[in-house]
Image (cartoon, helix red, strand yellow):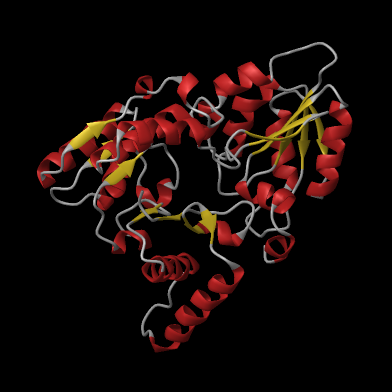
Length: 342
């Protein structure tokens, strides 16, 4: 019953995917218009030039204002305290999980990272949390108490898998957060139940094709690789004459060695590739990390050719998982013009 906007990053299938109203991507015409408006302002800004993410955030907020949305869901980019999305005043804040990532910026412990994430909290405004790590959760509780912000823990046990359409067992905790946040905004329980039973999330354990089965997932760090373990055990269990292939690449600033260690045991073959982005890990480094798993590994630089090889290895009965980097998914499955901008 509300007009809603959402701002997520990075994008997978289209640049326009980042800015949505009512679940629909911003049109090409509106995207161009918002970009023109924001870029016309940039020459008048003194001091440090805005980052790409700050420009995109400004475009999203301008679009939401023009579309008269009642609520906007903004995903923080890095941390929270100094993030561009933190320029807004939230009616409530949601922190789904906390892991050791971007430690050079956010801090080397989960408690320190929690303090950065807690920058999105506001005095007297509710905070919904599904953080499992005790040190991080305790830190969030302490900060919420100091701010007088009601604290709500969303447990995945509150969501029955039978009532959730979204693929991936890890979505139960996210759904619990969404359900609690919606309830705090006085959305009726029947509407929440209907939403959870119909909602799907692109690129999160999404099946793209069959014969062979090709699944894609955004897992790109150790916490995400741990989160999909039960899904791997279910969908990539050993079956005779049904090969399991992992198509993998990673950004050089990610802990891809540990990610491969967590994933490799579920697969018979690993195919490594390198999308043409500056941040992509070098093939020789990926090969070295993969060699630690003692798996049958193929190295094919071009992602399109690597996907073709993965399907060939799988045959009609096999199964392929593509993960390790959102940028790999972008290159293989994104819009052609989006892919060229990479």
